Image 1 (cartoon, rainbow, N blue to C red):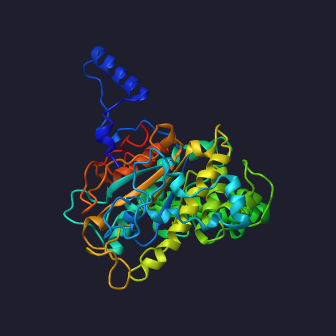
Image 2: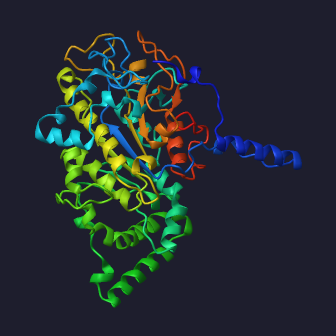
Image 3: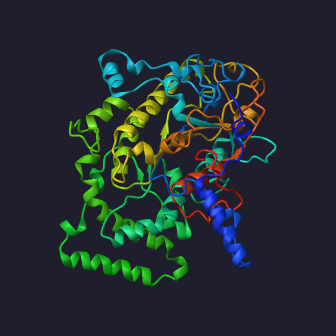
Length: 470
């Protein structure tokens, strides 16, 4: 595994070069030209992504056994995969060789669709081995409560979740769609309210939180059910209630009213057969049927959420967040981690197949327009041993806990020639960083920038980075 930043020096892309020439020319012509604040810097891929699948590996994940496999046995007791796709720099954990979902008749059907073990598609994934919540901190945050707060919001005690930031950052896009009489769904959190926080001006942009995988309860339409006088009365009550509140205190009222309006607006979508992912339909939608998606991903909770995410994208949803696995294994990790990672491998393989098969309304496939990212609140450690006394792992303040070795895949990554790349590395003996260390907030800002979000109000001290896309 090599340090990408050392190997590949600065090479400006076409957009950066033209942008720089334009600013230089303007500066010569007008010495007092305005120069943008550095915190507003954009990436090469600004607005190039239309969708994001953000997967939390729930409970704290042993990244060194999965996406940073070139580590000593005390960090990766399962070892490194031997036969991986050529040009793969990142250390592929041996557990990704597990692919029981390719066995039997259904396994043959999945293989025919193009599914393969992660070891064979590792060149489609880039990895950031050293992502840290607080790179300047003396130690890792191995606390479940504060670690998850950092993961959801970027800060301890943060009040605005990442998906709320996305919806807020795309507010002008949603407003433009409404003015044109079309509907673009917001970002959705599938089963986790922690990604749906927001107060004040952000309250109205909190993502819907879905429990389950059906929209039957959301299909009520007042316009099609209530008489005109009842609709008028309800609207008048809302307006009077809003009018008696001071403008500074109306955020909660506005959030409530917008939620009601959105429910009405989305009722037709929520009743669409496309979102009934468990109907086992053979009708192709964008290239794959619901039955094929079930064959690819299976029927676990995470699998159903992935299937629903792909269908939500059909209606303009920019981002979906979901949990996978249960990785807080202080005991039984030796036997339990392989099972959860086998499911993760199936999801990653399935997403490669599905995204490349689904046609996108803006041209190309969903692979060309989608980013898939996995993370967790922290890594895991056995404090110098392969496992703790209960054959599990813990979380403390060391490098093993500190580093989230986060995988990123999608067409924007492979089109830039970065599939299989490792952006930085760690020393195998002790996981000391050798190369780039990324702020977690910078990564979130990079993802927002790729989606085209207005992110000026968030993480002002952290800049988006181009490494994945340049």
